[in-house]
Amino acid sequence: MISRERINAVLQSKTPDRIPVFPNIHFGTAHLGGYKIRDFATDAKKNAACLIGAYKECGYDGIQVGCDVAIEGEAVGSKVDYPEDNVPSVNEPFLSDPKIDRLKMPDPHRDGRMPVIIESTRIVAREVGGKVFIASSVMGPLNCAAQIRGVENLLFDFYDRPSFVEELLSFAVQLGGVYGKAQVQAGSNCIIIGEALASPAVISPSFYERFVRDKEKLLIQSLRSSGAEHIILHICGDISAILAGCASTGTDLIDIDWMMDIGKVIENKEIKDAKITARGNLNPAGVLMNGNPEDVFFESKKLIEANKEKGRFILSAGCNMHPVSVPQNLKAMVKAAETFGQFSAKIQ
Image (cartoon, rainbow, N blue to C red):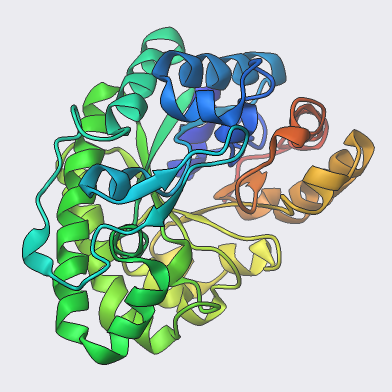
C-alpha cells in the first residue's frame, strides 16, 4: 500500500498492510529543511519544502500543513510577534475591546498568512498528493475566538458577556469554514480543527457543552459541505470528560494526548458508534523530544501492540512535535510500525 491508501483503509474500517504513521508535526520540520521557524511560517515554498522533505526522508504516511494558532486571528487584525526560531503568537488581540461590529470576514487568498498555508497545501498536493494523505489546519471556534479577543479576555467573557461570546464563536465558525474551503480547494484531503482551549484543563465540560460543541459541529458540517473528506478534532489534555461531546460533533478522527489511554478511547462506546479513528499518542515533550530513537521505537512498539487489533488507530504524537525530534525519532516511529504494525488477519 502507498501512504494515502494505508490511512484511508483505517478510516474505512479495513485492514491496512500495517499501522499508519501520521505524525502531528508541521513547524517541527523546519530545521530539517534548513530554515528557522520564522521562514517556515511566512514563506509558502519553504513551508512546503520542509513538509515534503521530512515526509520523504522519514517515510511516514500523512503530511500536516500548518504552522501556528495565530493565522486566523492575524488575518482578522490581531498583531503577531515573529520570533526568529519559534512559532508566531498574538501579542495584541484585535478585539481588545468587545466590539463585535468591528469584525470583517478576511479573504483567505489575500489576508494575513492564510495565503501562505493555502499555497503550501497546493504545492504539497501537486508534488506528493497522489501518494500521501494531506491534512491542513484551521482553528476551532474557541481557539479562533481567543486569537481575535485574547485568551484571558475571552475566558472572562464567558461570565461577563455570554451573548458576545456566542456572536464571536459564530463568526469564528464562518471564518473556519471559509478558510477550510480554500484549503480543500488547494488539495487537502482532511481538515484539522485545532481547539486546544476546549480542553477541560481550560474550560469546564459544562461550558464546552453549552458554548463550544455545537459550534464545532457547525464548522464540521460546513467543511464537509465544502468537500473535506475527513476531519480531525484536536483538543489538548485529558478529554475523557468531554469525549461523548466530541464524538457527537461529526468528526471522524480525534487526536488523543499522551496522558490518556488511547485504547480506552478506541473502545469508548460513543467513539465506536460514531466510527471515529484515534490518532496518537506518544508524548511530544517527553520521549519524542528528550528520548533517543531506541526509546521512541520501544514506546511506539507498546502503543502498536496494545492497539493495532482494535482497529481505527493511527500512530502519532499526542500534540505538535518539536524540531529536535526530527529526523531520528520520526524515523523510529516508522520503523516500529514497519516492524510491529503488520496484521496477521483482517480486523473484525
